[in-house]
Image 1 (cartoon, rainbow, N blue to C red):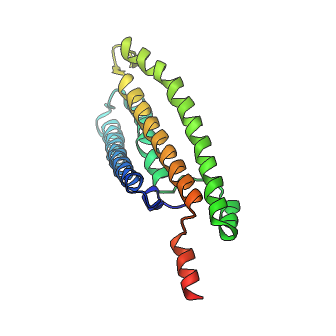
Image 2 (image 1 turned 45 degrees about the vertical axis):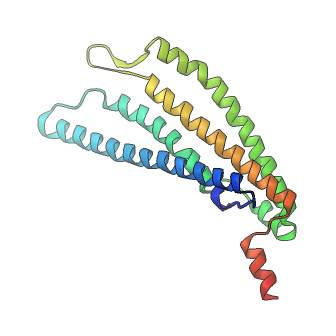
Image 3 (image 1 turned 90 degrees about the vertical axis):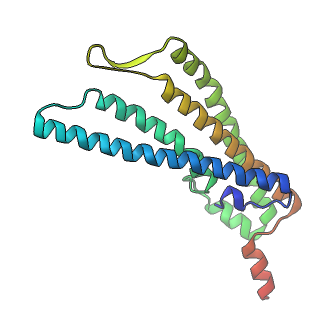
Length: 194
């Protein structure tokens, strides 16, 4: 599966938007990587504190659980944008070898279905975010560790929104390629060699 920025359509605005979207998702993914490093550091310090001083850091399980959710939604849009989201595309590969336009068209329909599903996720999650923000909902144990949950819900909402944008952009690029009959570089190289 090609990266979103590599799905050239020949339309400057669409191609530039795909490149910009790819850069934004890469930045979000980098933030997710930093969060992973911070979680690893937190767990290491907690283990050392337990072992050497008999004093763990309060709230580590809650912070790790919230961080994992945030990390997933910080990185998933870039995973799709880079073409690395797990899927079975053996049939699409076969179809593209036979008819590139038909393969791109079917892939566009699958990305359109993904757009719809993520739209449902975003619209279903938005009220949960508003409730957690409005009520300042907290996680943890009173007297030991309490943290607001709404920042993580905001990251989930933003990450889902970016995933929606990537699915939409990929669907648009693939539909344009199917309509115009844009060849891949592999096809052009193969025809040039013959």
